[in-house]
Length: 126
Image (cartoon, rainbow, N blue to C red; front, top):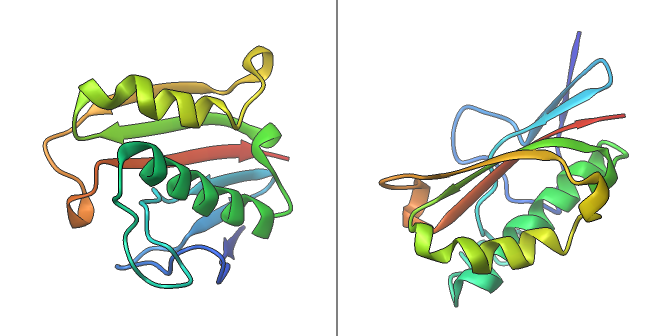
């Protein structure tokens, strides 16, 4: 059985998908980009503020499922430019305890939705 997780504190889906799906004790989030859910505007000032907005959106989705970053077991990070890796990693890493950080892959891609620079999805377990 699956439960659809939604929150107004993260951007609404822009296609036929949900913000997250809870199956048993496992939460699968959709990829988040840097939409500010209050304004509907993309936060693209610089890669650090863009990444921070992505993480804020993911935090809201986790909270809607009564979870937080300590529950995250796996992340997938898609970036448009590997030269931004260190800056993205600085922001991303501030949300996790290094000793208990989740598994992760970071992949450079040719293009992301809305021409953003970073998209992150997560798997979390209660």
